[in-house]
Length: 154
Ligand SMILES: Nc1ncnc2c1ncn2[C@@H]1O[C@H](COP(=O)(O)OP(=O)(O)OP(=O)(O)O)[C@@H](O)[C@H]1O
Image (cartoon, rainbow, N blue to C red; front, side):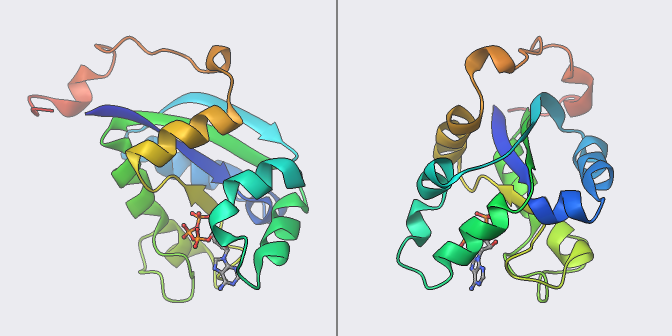
């Protein structure tokens, strides 16, 4: 299924000058950008985005870290994009994320772990709406990238 997913390049990625490199990973994989912008996040959006962590002891630290510098929000499109992008990010903690994943290759931290990626189709729909207005997203013609998927059935 052709789908869209949300990626956030976290403040650590901008601070470390890794923005271009991480965007390239997604482009080289064959995902297509339909939206991208730099944003300064605040408590209001982070309370919503990290609501599932509200009772965890590191909640405030995670929010401060996400507010420390701007982030880059991206909407990526592709067949089964949610799973593909989430797999590329790898598990939360960079120290034990497998080599080859973004977190495995680019960080040693659990908190400063380079990217956020939506973890399901349902979450992606909610998260894209949280960070983008509909008019900020480009609608690629469905046939534009047919060649990427050759004769795959999806
Ligand atoms: N034990 C922890 N200590 C410090 N920070 C943490 C810890 N667990 C999670 N975090 C931070 O909170 C974010 C959200 O945690 P969650 O459990 O949803 O992990 P995730 O789904 O792998 O991460 P994300 O939602 O950012 O992709 C993590 O990406 C990380 O930055």
